[in-house]
Length: 343
Image (tube, rainbow, N blue to C red; front, side, top):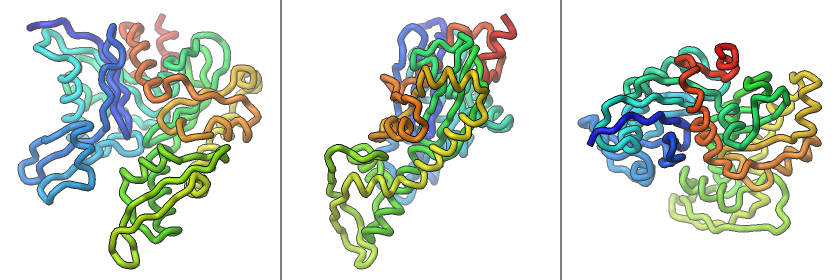
């Protein structure tokens, strides 16, 4: 069955890939993981099927994350993963290749930008356009970015945290730091090794972050039983971990994100800072769901902070909504302000 190509928006994240199809919304949300046979180079599994293999594969199978810290670390695997996902959402035989908008961190270099565009073209896109994550996150969170009104967005993903002040459809001031969800997981692994002499895997750390992770004191202390390998005996060991310990484990990455927020506010023009004080700060991305993050930023900045309604898919939703302007965008556009100049 032949079908006309639909425009597609892709949130190409370090932890997961979300795909938005025009007219249908977000129809795919899969982990950014691929599993390949080392001997033949054959792609075995993509997404959640491949993630289930992480840390559990035999010698000839390797499960890898082709994106690190918000950018492509394995070009070939990213291209193959994108091809699978585009094919999955497009379905059937298409007469035309789709036009695709891909989300990128605000601090991306020209070389990294080119790699994303090339990977998209090789994966089957007719044309690839880029949009900055904070801009997409703001659109997805329902902010009207076209007004001359300052809004601050803190997008904490898997590999990067993007903090930006947006006004008149463009980024006025921003920073992108490579401290986000993955670093939270690493902090838990290091903490468990240092404090409890126990070695745990990435998936266990992710579970702990989601179950009892917090960055602001909880009203009620929570605990979780964790199994890992004892570093002294090499045998399995079970320990009980509390939410207060999680605050201790997260201290370093959280401080770096707070410093970045302060830095952007310091560089923002006074008029826009006044706007942000009135409008508040909006948090998006999976990392913003760590318990108490909004309360901590409110306490440190004095500016009311909220987590967007659907924080995880905000960027994908915003990328999808920006498909409406795709005809007036330039290839490789990373800032919607250029759209204003073209109109």
